[in-house]
Amino acid sequence: MIYEPADDSFLLNKYVKEFAKGKVLDMGCGSGIQSLTALENTNDVLASDISEEAANYCKKKGINAIYSDLFSNIKEKFDLIIFNPPYLPKDDVDKEFSLTLSGGKKGNEIIERFLKEAKKHLNENGKILIVFSSLTPDVLKLFRKYKYKFKKLDQLNFFFERIFVYIII
Image 1 (cartoon, rainbow, N blue to C red):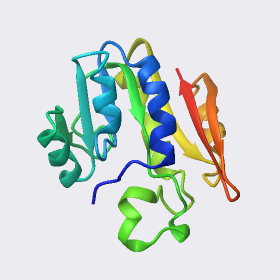
Image 2 (image 1 turned 135 degrees about the horizontal axis):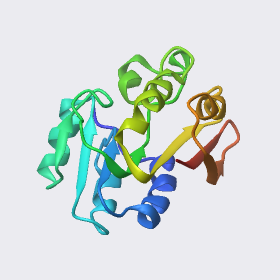
Image 3 (image 1 turned 180 degrees about the vertical axis):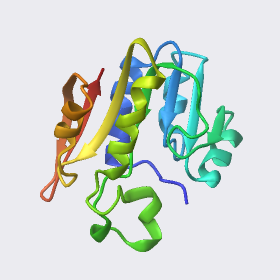
């Protein structure tokens, strides 16, 4: 299943336009929207997804894409890592859409796995753009736990949740 662009994708995309330079990783590339935008600023973009279908879909769009469960098949370092993770608690997600939407039982487990490994894949002065929901618990605590500096760039407000974009270093 391929995650089609939604409000979180479009909000994140505004900042990909601003920050994409140098060597870029689009983690959880889905439809490739972030990769295609990054390619407007740099030729060095790697897209990855846990869905082989999504990686192959991006390849057909001319994007350098690979299958990878987070960093399992990625050894390089990057100037920017873009991450639109699945971030909803498992109970809030239809089983059919679980891979693209559920971040685990609480909703933050995939984000935590990502944060544990991400620093090893950042160049000096490298940055991460990440999007998540107010329904995702303890994300800022996880940033602190793994000793990242972070800043909220933007948010979208809905009647049932808020979606945030943060830059972390």
